[in-house]
Length: 256
Image 1 (tube, rainbow, N blue to C red):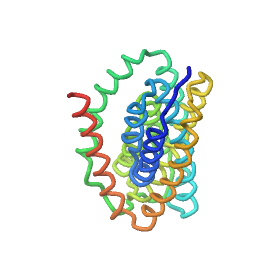
Image 2: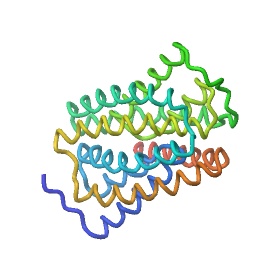
Image 3: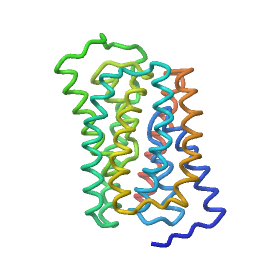
Image 4: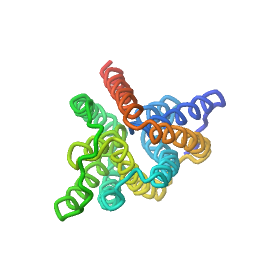
């Protein structure tokens, strides 16, 4: 499929995907910015999903490396969640390939209000780390379950994945926002690549558009992760509220 993007629209996409990377590295939810931008630029839904996943996967790789380098994650929990996320996201992406553009748009219209309620309900998250550092069978299964559920959502829909992961890790596993964000990066990295492999096999990634957007997303992720690691909850919590506003804004736009 030949997809042509004008130079001004390409510049718009590069800016928006860079901003999306900045937000995503700090609080998740970068897809709330980049997915509408790709659609606005004229990419059909399936190509939007695939190209967005390509640029997001590139950016998340660098953000994950930053959190790992600074020790801001529970690696055992993160790896288990990543395994579950990879399986869930691959399944979700395969489901997407079987759906029509109309069904995808309707699915987002139904799921986004639910996502908005969840984020609004859990907007006040703890600063302290309540995890004792051990890993028993219950925690291992919980990490796998969190990963699979959020990965499935990411493969099928996407927006808010990192935010939901942060909420799950703080609420269910007792991590502080900084550590929860680091674990969310590992989970999100696995789900991004699982979906991306599926989309690549279907030839849906528009590389002339995706490569410049991937570069800007990487830059945004590096800058955003620097602020998140340096300032912790003081920076992450306001950014999560930004994600909430974006999610609610998309919901209202879809309704109108």
